[in-house]
Image (cartoon, rainbow over all chains, first blue to last red; front, top):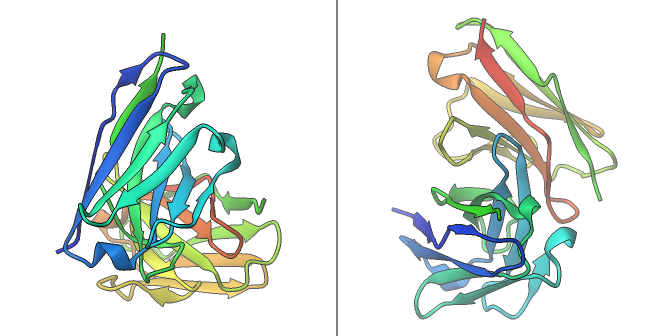
Length: 120
Length: 106
């Protein structure tokens, strides 16, 4: 069955960097665009970024543009989110998510999430 | 940016009740609207996409409808496992979510 397993969340100081990973299994990873969605504690959902199935096209939510980089390694079935210049408002659970169809922007599978806390 | 507004913020209901959740888009999103259910400590799960198509395995007590920029999620007879937070999401112009409606026990 489809599984998405995130890792890499931690407590970091403002201005520092962190890289999240999401290992996928149970589907043809290289055929699907993949997304990161985050949820601040006690708050709603916020889409963060998407990368096309082949990694060539990447799009970001405005507040993370220039600071976050989404990427993927299809040989390792792994999605990444490099987060630089972290801010307190980036504190959230970060989920990787798969679209229902190859280019879908609605999500039929989500990982369990990994918590990023930005605090001094 | 398309703003999605859900109402009410909280709904207090009893098992067996018919429940209607609303979601309004600030501009047209066509039928590019999804609904998710999220239980405490869990990731969201897809209920509805295309405004009215149930995702695989979703019981038929869940239904979605649309009228212009107004969208509705209806639960025909609320079960105990349906107490959760529900989010709408548009995917017509990038992605944006509503703020959620919490369905709690009365």
